Length: 218
Image (cartoon, rainbow, N blue to C red):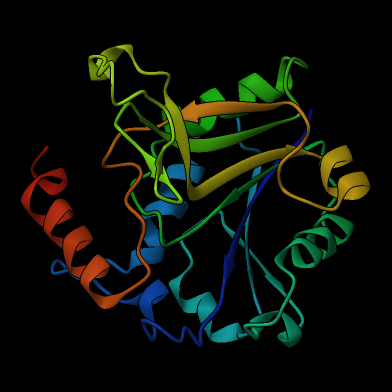
């Protein structure tokens, strides 16, 4: 089965301009982290950066391909599922790995685990998630426990939050359902560090601190 990874990049980020190519303290551009993880994932056959601006090419690492996308996908109103579908029509594959530069600490091992789950046929997709066993409320009411009988947190039913860092899906999911999550998704649990997501300037500073203070010393 052919497995292709795509990393969509928008150069005109509104909340954190230039974040995808912004450098951490040691000079490493943000985009390099996810590209290296995908390149080192043995289950991934090819990796593409999907961007409307060709200047992104100067930030690619060896072995990563560039595919130019329509500029209409750079707008805030763009339907991202349409963008993923357009990519699937341009680059045929059996399984797609959608990963984001803004989730820089995804591990190759997690990528491999997710792809293998989908390859097994038991699942049609996989979602990077963070497991929560905490007390949640919704609309002013407890969501997952009875305040009259407070359980231990470890006895609560887990709730999974999408990290938005990685999605893995079959060709059939994107072509027939036109989305990145199928009807039988695998919950790919990742660590707190892997779940790091960069949206705002403070998120970048936190990620830089994690990398500089912890990961670069390992």
